[in-house]
Length: 106
Image (tube, rainbow, N blue to C red; front, side, top):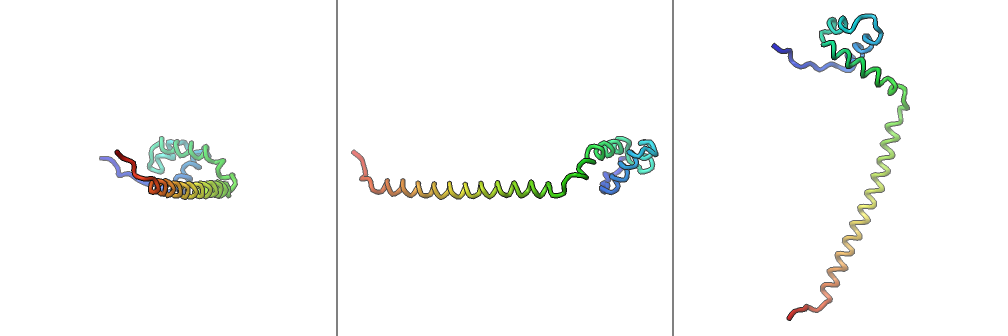
């Protein structure tokens, strides 16, 4: 019978990955002690190695990117508003022009 799917906390994943990187135990021993699959330990170890540089990145880099996107969004919203106003103006001018023309017909 299969075991129900388990969700592990990020602290648990970090502890397991850190143990695997330290090399004091083999990956198989860590997996056996923690009752998880060897492949899962290897995957968490690989992910930790790949993302360690993120720990030392500027903490406000995300905020800078968000501010930049908000500025671009504001510019685009103003442009959309301007285009909507121009469209409405042109529709009114066309409607006014259609009313002033005499009906043509045979």
